[in-house]
Image 1 (cartoon, rainbow, N blue to C red):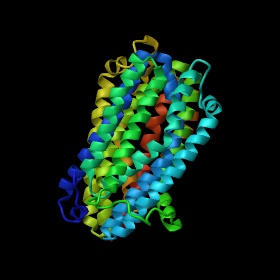
Image 2 (cartoon, rainbow, N blue to C red):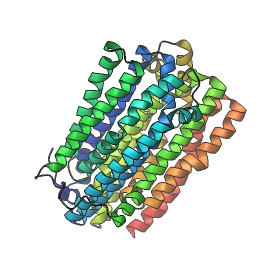
Image 3 (cartoon, rainbow, N blue to C red):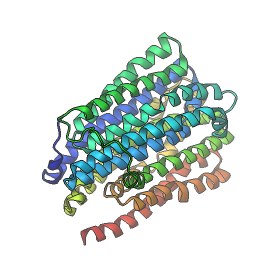
Length: 445
């Protein structure tokens, strides 16, 4: 539970990666598994159209999360670098600015989205059948938006300041609260999809309280101090600059998911959107495990970059790429061999099952190479090279995926929608490899 940030520059890299990654993986995988279980509760307890309604909320949830992710990821990377430079006061000032930014953005973005919720959902592909489910879910989520921002942002900084075990425990407690409340609200109280959203908000509130308590303790390596909460223009600029990669990635992911949903509705109807929600849940589980490795890598890379120990940060990157590739390959094999078994857990509707099985096999066909790209973008972010991280994140979404979503369905209809992802994965991985080779040569020099 207790951490020592100075170990990041001295301990064996492989041991550090396990020490920091395992708690993060447990936390991110548990959160992702909860989302899967939540969708199973909704599919079995509310109905197949509720799954489609929930899938329609993904773009809007990504947009609201993008602002919190920008602050949390940017601030945690800066904290790691400052600690590597032995600048504890600088890290404390970053913590205070991150809290104030999350409060401002969490409240304002949640309120704005709540006011314009219905037209936003229609623009994202809602029909008269799926709109009620999406609206009921998002109304509750947006009311508690500030807690999502604070919980995720503070937990990132807890991990970056040398407490990976504490960050894991806070996430697991949050997931446990969610898992306990969701079936009670959905099945016992019969609150339907609104009950699932309320369980999520309650859990995020508990997570926020636990994270705040950590930073009030005197023995915390970085903690809240009087005079360190005032917003500083330079620090805000640095947080936004480093976190901009995650922000833009989520914003464009929202755009891509919206195009996905509109194309799926055109070529497969409302159930095709539900099928995408199921496939995305499985893909997200694998991505969350990789992100757990990234979160373990980030403080190691950031600290050693700040301390100018380049061989150590390169080794941490290579080990993370290997681990991510193994994870993605494992999920790929499960999705290709047992797709019907996986999909049947969400619904017993035959049409939805058949659409999701086809989508899973096609959409995840190049999954083994995806981990490399995710880790590389995070690597550049961890060493403060935000421009490269942004470039790699956006090229996959904008340069390759969006055109593929317009071109392939024109020739292959519904199959073309599913194949757009693998086409973008292949192209962007080649580009990522070229950029990485160029930058690693510069780092070694």
